[in-house]
Length: 336
Image (cartoon, rainbow, N blue to C red; front, side, top):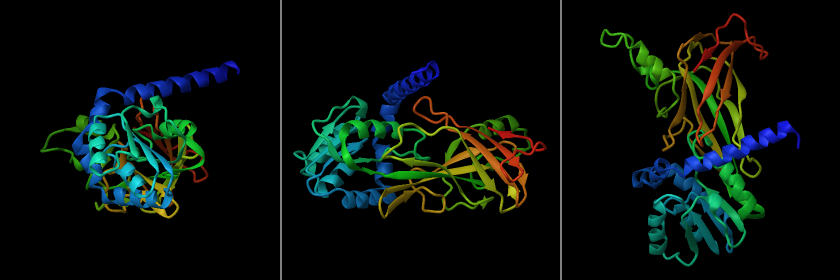
């Protein structure tokens, strides 16, 4: 291995260690151990019903299943109901204690083993036929380190040809304009006062917003940003360039982001703003300058998730291009 490759390998090893360290911090454990957060997920009908259908389609009688980030144990219970011989439910937060009670209360103590630990520290006594995980975040991979945890579990827990729920996911971004949500809601001036410094802060940070059902002007068609294959991928996505051809004249307030996950053949799950609201909401990447664009123009978004602490720290910039991917020298770069 040459020096450059050693440096890359060392950086990757450090990132994996750091991500594991962050995900074991008290604030993270407290967040996922909160009954109110778990209730929000349990009341997400689209989430629960899609996973239930995927599990009943994928788990065969006699299968061994591992559930990463089991939470209350709901997906483990679904797997047992579907006929799994045994389920290993892995949960690192204090919700594991509640999950153990629920497993016993529903009569599955002999078929579901609750393991309270982070999955990378777990050793299972046998290989599994199915891996199920609902550790998806708003843009699929941007806060729970799902890809690297699944990759580790895939290598150490699964039999060859094992099924993984979800199988894959695509992430999308949409340039938009709206006065109904996001940083643009705060008028300027504000009660006759200059609140520009505060507005600048709003436009400088990404956020989660409830865009479903809200009026907005889509400046183009949604664009695919990343494709994630949970059977193959081992690392979080890196910087990419995403083109958008403007189809509606308007002010660019920012970009909305969401995922479309294929849980198994025939079962999809998405937090698209065109669908009813889920507990994930949508990702909002604001653009401070709010430039105005004309139909036919092509924008190029440089997007970097910059995942260095188990969570995305988004870096992005927008340029007007000539339509063939080349940046127009006359257009100012819009950054956040």
